[in-house]
Image 1 (cartoon, rainbow, N blue to C red):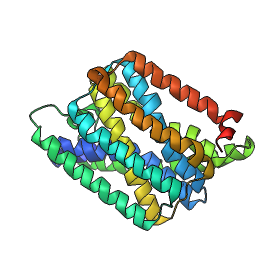
Image 2: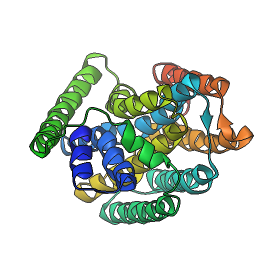
Image 3: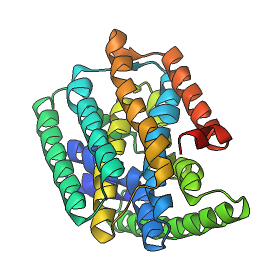
Length: 302
């Protein structure tokens, strides 16, 4: 779907900035969107909220850590002042609503308006620095083997969308089945197995970029994905159906998400890069988090 969309955008002479900021970012977040929506409409709302929280944790610990281990990530001033602070603010808002309120149509509309405002600001900022090779342009360049013919590009998009929808239905039904067989909560399955699965597109983009020497765009892609997950996906799903954060997420995982998001800022400020050691530390934190999900230690907080 991403390849087809990028091909259509390039054939229509759409700016690489728009491709990077919207098409690729939305494309890699499409599994989370469709899976979360399918889970919500199927009655597995706990799994839906768990998927978003789990995906963001996977992005910041496992995927960002893997990218830094492959190649240390240099951090630009723009990443810190614009994108990181925006992610922190969005996560703080998500935390407040998740802990004290409910995600309904009003909240969903507000989230989408904030996302639209951010994209507008980001586009203007990127356009002002268009002479430099911005990370959004590099992201769009990382999408390889795009079809040259327009009809084939449209076919790519249609087949991709159908595949995502079918995949989402199979993922949710499989997740519910696993939860019943192993007698674990649907929330836990959403936090772990489904979160990792729906985050694989981000992992692919980030790892390929790092291997090609573009590790500095990994952070921008991950921050953008987290913003889309919180503002775009939760915003869209909340308009369709209201969501309430399960108690086990409120008392533990929601705090973990907030703490990890705040941890990114000092990691980036120190020496203005994320080193291999720090990347390994992030991966260690995710392994620890994953271990706690399947132990009785987590029950202390619930």
